[in-house]
Amino acid sequence: MHLKAYNQFLEYLKKEQKDQAVIYAMSLLEEKKLTIEELYQELLAPSLTTFECDVEDQEVCIWKEHFRTSIIRTILESCYLYIIKRVEDVKKTEKKIVVFTPSFEYHEIGAIMVSHFLLLEGFDASYIGANTPKDDILSAIKAYHPDFVAMSVTNPYNLVITKQINDEIKKQYPDVKIIIGGQAFVHQNALESIKYDYLLQTLDDIKNLRKEVQV
Ligand code: B12
Image 1 (cartoon, rainbow, N blue to C red):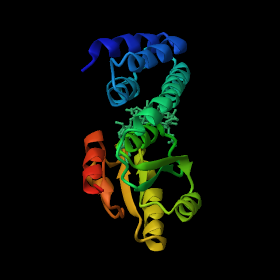
Image 2 (cartoon, rainbow, N blue to C red):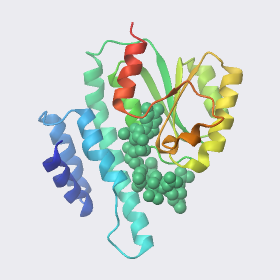
Image 3 (cartoon, rainbow, N blue to C red):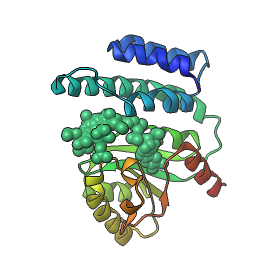
Image 4 (tube, helix red, strand yellow):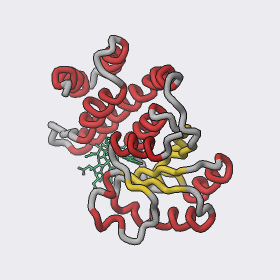
């Protein structure tokens, strides 16, 4: 664990010093002190999942959370160049994956990270967005002909729409494998009646999928 780096990063976030946070995160990659995977898992993800507001006023807390998310989002986009460079040396799987979050699901940081992890494992992954309506998902499948779709669901309220989307994918495109992941599936009963082929949560799960589709 890179605890020192995490604490330093958190200091910048707590003070809402966006530029310093972005520069620091990128310098860790540039100086090869952290890999992309370590940066995402040990700094970026916990800085959001453990977010605690130290201000009484709830409205202030909301914009603080939004601002922190926007800093993390900027870092993720800035990492893309590093991903392209690393992917050049990765053995490709020839498997296409469309990544998204379903209608009403605005939490997208996990989905973006997962799409980057998939690229680094040699998948041809495309993140098509958050809050994606069923018809747009179906038309993306029609256009891209993916081998897999990967959906990230955080809010358990969105399990109903998830079920509807997956039923429709399986009806229209039975050969497309459905991967689900995200905090909404942490409880076993969330899976009841949802059609899916893989439940994945971690980078190790993605690496195992990579081994399964070995070419
Ligand atoms: C940032 C944030 C937001 C932002 C999201 C912005 C954005 N662009 O993404 C905004 C402000 C929009 C938001 C809104 C809301 N939020 Co919010 N939010 C969060 C917060 C602080 C961080 C989420 C995050 O990005 N985590 C970091 C990522 C990296 O973690 P992750 O998503 O879990 O992903 C990891 C794994 O789960 C996994 N993974 C995820 N998906 C997938 C998919 C696959 C295929 C695989 C392999 C792996 C995988 O890989 C990732 C990397 O490790 C969490 C707190 C928390 N504990 O997470 C609350 C939280 C998720 N939000 C919550 C709530 C309640 C809401 C709102 C309903 C609040 C409201 N009243 O308006 C709305 C709902 C909006 C909606 N319709 O979706 C609750 C959910 C509680 C619950 N279980 O129901 C949480 C837990 C806060 C809390 N403690 O109450 N939120």
